[in-house]
Image (cartoon, rainbow, N blue to C red):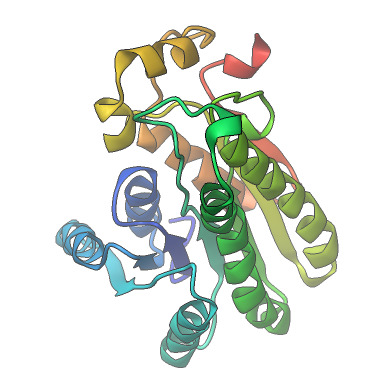
Length: 251
């Protein structure tokens, strides 16, 4: 097992990509802590993982509130005395149901997108990294998006925020490398989740058209990339963004 007894935080782990990541780490022997604003769903996911033999707990956390993030991290430290792996998976995209013309959007939407998609991983990094520095060990995987590298005319704020996650990854990778803390990033393409399943075809089809493999990705395919980057198999990989997008970025 690649992550035996490693205390692993998965933010946004109640469903979708986060759920697949949490399940993957649990199967590999990690002690998984799911942090999500969807408290009931997080608890249900934890029960499913426990039924599979995994060690997991769930906490309801509103990650847009700094104090709740600090309190959640403090509780984890109090119980296990360390945090080995942090997966920053929380995210929100404003355009799965409607196409938004940027000039008709307002600052409230920009702030929401920037907060959830960029400031939330920054909050968790700031709360967790001091403990990793103390232990001289840590693995941080940020979940960005290919929208951080490609134009998204109907999701401008989201695209800007995810580009920020990629930049955050690179900067923290340099800052944390002397402490044996590796920081990397996964940039998913369009993945089959509840959001994409419920999105209208006219929104999904233009995004799917340039995908070389011609299909949506699966949450488990993102989880596999995250597990790899967190493992010792990726011991010489630092500050990188791995695109898991079915070949979208090649076109």
